[in-house]
Amino acid sequence: MPIPESSAFLAKKPQVPPTFEGVDFNDTKALKAAQDAVLREQWVKSMMARIVRDELGKCYYREGVNHLQNCGKLRERYLELLKDAKIKGYLFEMRNILPGQTK
Image 1 (cartoon, helix red, strand yellow):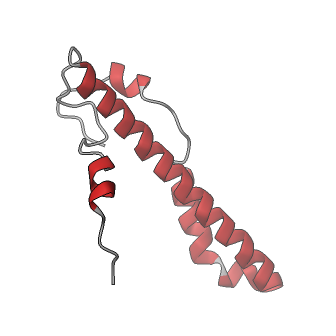
Image 2 (image 1 turned 90 degrees about the vertical axis):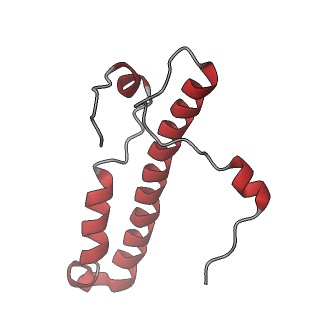
């Protein structure tokens, strides 16, 4: 059963999608919100990869010589998350927006 989100958490939760599409660059508040959303999304992906890596290390230690058979799902998940785990910043995305481009 999920835990209900408090009103304080909902007030701080970002309302902006992690993209610069449709952002007015002259509006400083909207620009900073989009930058924050992009960086937050990159940090979330990085931390997810870190958590899976820690679980993979525990699985390797726990399974011993059978780790190739028993830790395969974690290994594949980690390799998938590793592709997007680097925190790149927002400048490239902000300067290279193509109309209609989505990730």
